[in-house]
Length: 416
Image (cartoon, rainbow, N blue to C red; front, top):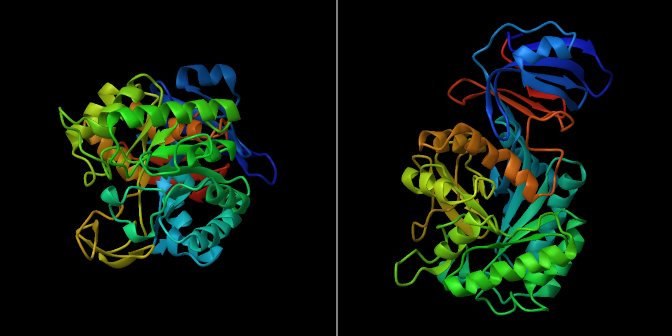
């Protein structure tokens, strides 16, 4: 048992009462010496040491150099631990990826698929829905197939198709309420309009995400406004659309041709859209990450991994849907063409890289926990606040994972 984790009186089958002490990262502040009390599967009390003795009757743990974060929430992940969600034929095959990320502090994970034939998307969605029904996944994300072939990235352009509200409805039915978000390119026929994919997504309770697009700034403005209107009318998880890995898979920013990047940054500055960043030191330069956090409203950025099967694994050959991938030096690229093919980091690694880029710790953690939980409409996740689910990541001072608690149970116990 470490000085940071002192078990107290049992509370029954959902887990024992725990008292944790360390540097707490809250949604809007860092408490340099604080305490978290866990009862069963919930956070019972969170606050500074100075207030602990007055509020609780437990023994105060000894001071600790630990940093205590909320369990992290990844909205965009294709796999890990050698397993790929787009290639998982059954729940057991997908579970290895969930467990790899959970062991490293991502206690809520959205599984991402890639562009594929409709029958493949439906089959993979059905597999992932099993894990979501069991509470092992927080949702399902489809990255395609209504994307721009000109900005296909590491996806197969031959499998991309026009927007189809019917396919959205079919996927949503198979997902059984777990379709959380879908990436679409607004210039693709059938994406916008009253009978388009965006409207169908909102009606299904899913959040449209703009990405893999070659659209103009003006069309992206229109698409974001249409998505907000549709989400507001349907009462979906979130009233704000997201942007799939800003900069990656979209027309670059140019002063005479601003494209999607300028429109998305402007919307995030106004709090009208949420930007994904793959801030893993591969997809984006540190200065780019730092600049986005300075421009956007602090509640309008989420950190994601875009991880594929090689996360947590050695270099080698892997698959991402229909595409062959080679990982060398921890960087995943298509075997043919060399495009970056997802990430190999876990979300805590992305948080660490973001802080190293000069982003304040409190903002980086909010972007990896609180804001993604808001996108999912989950008020029980994403923050060290009394009443929320007891998902806790204990790290060293430099944000290396030491222990992971999910719903009040240790996935990775503190070192002895």
